Every structure is written in structure tokens, then in C-alpha cells.
Length: 363
Ligand code: ATP
Image (cartoon, helix red, strand yellow):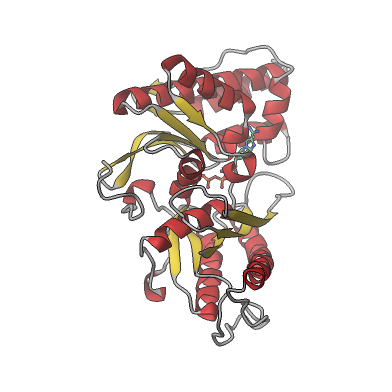
């Protein structure tokens, strides 16, 4: 099976090809190809209109590159190679279907994300699905962040910490759905860090810069806000900005930010493991690329005898590989969409997804 994935919820215009003999588990025949083009704001944070303009230009190119790759794989394995035409022609029209197709299905991020970006991704996915006459699969971006770690780790029923730009939540599986066990009460964790770095005058994205400077700093205390299973970042960010304005060395504020924010996420992850009785934790999302966060989560899991898995960085930040992987599972489960029902959903919560691809006997 060969599935094309298309991602474009915010900053990453990305297309991928996932090829597998069995989408339910990691196998020797698995192959992932990812082509991404990142939107880089000249100043400030992500501007939705500029991000959408970037998607409009970059999505056709990354999709075409991925399809070309799928075609090469198909012709090497002798199972098809398409007709050599561009998936979306210069007028935005979809040429008539030809066979055999180099892909079996097209999966796309349906949400959550920036509406103008998602609409471009949805349009591209529909065009490619019609062009090759293959099914369309609508993937929840946050569930994809979770499932890539679950897939690669081989864990059966982990708790997942999604620590990304626009989100921060703990997910656990129960009776056919991923339940939100705890979440941010205000902004996403990466967005909070990026707001602080914008205040300091650093270019987006701020997370890697905070990580680099924190290594040189000493801990500066900041408010720690965990309420039950939920947490809040806005007060910490205001305090971090104030500390910077009060001439606390920026590397000390960065260190304080990392230690405080990641301790909060680690505490709630531990509580989620304890409440659910799970002994496996997977990490998802772009902030998961941070080594300090990975270390804190790994140490917490070691101390309680739980297993911890963090995918490699290219699968943590936004990428179409995770969309293609979950798309393959959904396609194999028959979880496909009619074109007429394939609208995007910019507020698509992970607990709205009826999980079709896990065994009916799993609880
Ligand atoms: P979402 O997946 O919720 O839509 P997103 O679209 O912003 O989020 P991601 O790629 O998941 O995309 O995460 C991007 C965020 O990750 C940015 O806020 C960025 O600052 C942060 N980030 C990247 N690298 C690091 C790092 N090393 N340490 C901390 N944060 C990081």
C-alpha cells in the first residue's frame, strides 16, 4: 500500500509518501519520503494570510515532488507509475484519471489549524484524489502527532503528550476515542514560548533559540500553574517578559521558562499515567524536539517503571509523514471520505475522531 499525505495546518507545506505491507505495525518494507517547505515570517509570528499565500505556492510543488517519488517507487516495484502528468495542472484543473495509479489513497490534514491554509490543503487533496481516482482520507492533525509515536514505538495503549505550537494536551484511548485527559487553559505551549521570544526580538520560531540560550543560564523562578489535569501558560509568559524588561539575563529567563513549563507538562503526564494505569508514554509535537523536555519525561517514566518514546525530530514537528502513516491505517480500516463531505475543520478536536483503525476489542 502506498499513501500520499498532505500537511499544511500552519507553517509546514509538506507532502509525503508512506509505503507499507501492513499499516498496523512497523515492518521491514516500510518506506517514508517527506518533502517540506517551511513558511518563515520575516518579522513577528505566523500571519495567517502570509501562511496561506505560502501554502498556495508551496503545496503544489511539494505534492508534485512526492507524487514523482511515488511514481518511481511504483515503477521500480512494477505496480503502476501513473501517466506522468502533473497532479494539478497550470490552470488548477485536474486532468482526467489514468491508471494504474502510483498511490492507493490521499490523506490530508483536515484540522485543527489555520482555516485559509487548511482550505488549500483540502483543495489539493481532493484534486489529487480525483486525478488518480483514489479514496480521500481526512486526518486529525493532533491524532496524527500521537499516532506516529504509537506506530513507531509499537506501544499498545500509551498516554500521549502533544506539545506543539498551537496545542498542549494529554490524550488517552478509551472506548473508541482519544480522550483529552488534560490540556492548556489558554495558549499552546510553543505559541507561548514564541510570544516571549518575539518580545525579546528574536525571529520565529523561538523554541530552538530558548533551548540554546537556556543551556548557558541559571534558573530564574516563574509562576508554576497546574490546576488538576490542566495547565496555563499565559501568566508565565507575562512574568518572563517582565523579568526580561527588569534586566534579568535572558539566558536565565530561558532556563526558568524551560524548567517551569516542562516540569508542568511532566507533572501532568505523570498524573495521566497514574490515573489511567498506563505504563507507556509517547511524545508528539514540535516542542517535543526539545532535549530538556525529552529528558524530563524520560526520567519521570524511568522512575515509575514506564516506557517512554519520542519519535525522531522530523516526525515531531509538523510533517506529512505522520499524515500519510495515519492515513494508511484509516484507509486500511475503510475510513475514507466522499469528496462532498471532505470539508476542513479548523477546530477539529482529537476527541471528535471516531477511531476506526484500532481493534474493536481494545478499551
Ligand atoms: P500544531 O501541531 O499544534 O498545529 P504548530 O503548527 O505550531 O503546532 P509544530 O511543528 O508542532 O507546529 O510546533 C512548532 C512549535 O515548536 C513552535 O512554537 C516552535 O517554537 C516550537 N519548537 C521547535 N523546536 C523547539 C525546541 N527545540 N524547543 C522548544 N520548542 C521548539
